Length: 277
Image (cartoon, rainbow, N blue to C red):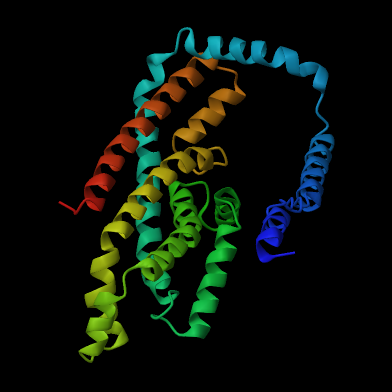
């Protein structure tokens, strides 16, 4: 047999397709089953009365009708005053958070603080993030009492964990060109931080500070439910007495104030990220 006779047989053998091996889906199936079991276990532990679920939308609509059919505007002046107290509480808490978290967060970043200090600060931030604002407020109540100062301190302390994490992640994600230039000129770590890192991250940190203020606005209403003052205390009191028309008015004030602050703060943040004022 010549080479010409053997060539077609060889090419025919090489053209035979070999089906790829089907990937195993055992791992994905196991994880899906475990997630489903976790959901079922959580639902069974809540002791939900499933027979009441069909009537739930109607009951919610009933209470919404009671609140917003005819809101009681007689308490509007006091509601505005308490809203201002909540905003002040949120603003002081945001300032406290920013003043403490920026230097600590920068020390927790790679290339700025020493290794042992970075580990301590990052662990501290993680512990603070694990504790809700309400728990911190309840602890502070034993020291400062039922005052708006309790809410401001709780918001400030609780925000340090998240804000500090944002700071050191922002520092580590900044470009290294300016830092290398300052180090090449003989600059120390403090000079690198002042002349290279800070100008690069300042707009982002200001944006995060405003975002922290927006979060504090919402959280301050929740802290009022535990006696920290502000609009949340009014909501708690009038809800307990079932004065739904006043509760509806308070909710309208809270929603409008929150939307207004979010709009203004969002516009400022966008301006900062585009290059400042």
